[in-house]
Length: 379
Image (tube, rainbow, N blue to C red; front, side, top):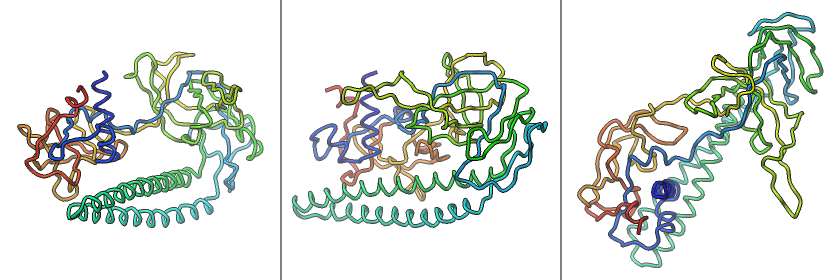
């Protein structure tokens, strides 16, 4: 287990920080040595895994639907006493403000994309200058600047990903501007849209999930988001659900994750998140489960996965640095689907899980000697 953990850490460092982070981890290395990693270990090396939260199965006697106080309501379609079916319209938001936010975010995204391209170009030029450097001091100065630019690139890419998330959420808000009933039942009340439980429906029954989420992660959820529900006893057993309400107005104090700051116990606030279940067959009342963002797999579970940071010229003629008989050599590969959750490709040809490959750093040349990271970690 320790060997695998060390390998995963080193692979993550290579993918995230290149030669600088790698050299910091393993220490001084021979100038003519290339460190290689096993391809089979990389399928689990990605840190991009959805967060999981605790939940419990409960009866769904009432469905409470909140209105977003930051959005204007254009039309209310029901009143107390109305009988509704699942899918009936309850109310509708005015999307004018949301459309403005979407248009603004799309413009900001274009600017962020240009910034990422600009920083990548600077990095590319610096790598060329490092190869041509005549003195050690010049090379060190260029390498320091290169690391600064790589940090700038990470910040720019993070800013871009934040904008993309905002765009997705706004698009979902516009798409779901018409709020519909998630269950058959009777409208119990239509209250103040700025208060708790704007519309309450007495449901005909069935189960729902009551998930408990801390204040640090509540922003990860939004109404109508698709959710994967997973059994705590057997993680292969899953159900699909959708968020129906987020009760931020009804905080729950938790002692499970208490921390002590300045001699005082600090209790993080937690909130209930209610999730409707698409098909509750196999679930039991009171059963403990976990919930996480629903992700549709783009790469088959048994496919060969490779982080994109190890692939050169992915859009034109993809290749990798591969160890062959103790020597590094460049090899062409064929790529399948791209997994934008784990930031990597399905490899359909040219590589096997038994191969060892190197992070494509600037110093690598054909014919250099190799050393396996696992062997180095054991020394």
